[in-house]
Image (cartoon, rainbow, N blue to C red; front, side):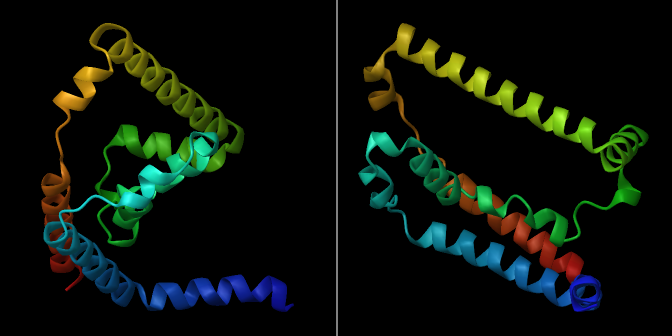
Length: 160
């Protein structure tokens, strides 16, 4: 009975604490934005991952650039189903009722992102060269920090 009832009990507790979770999440996003504005140094440990561990490096870079925060808009209440247009509602319903279709869509999306990223990386390497990357690199840390502050502020305002 515990294995069956415990997940539902925890879900009810999360629903009861939704406002508090949204407030904490908004403050975390604002804190991350402030941290990125104050510390202008890029993390050095990301450059020390050996090429043989490319999956680990990719995971660390994704975490460092905020991929872990992508789920926060759901918890911040920015993605309400009632605010979606008909097309998004239909897609949400199809993916919620047909697991195989949802997995196929996820696979095709992932494949498209990997192929397009690979083609873009090859094109830059082939036609522009690595020297272009070392000279033409630009840093978007401040833009990222300001966007986190904006989203966190809007989420905090919506939660209050």
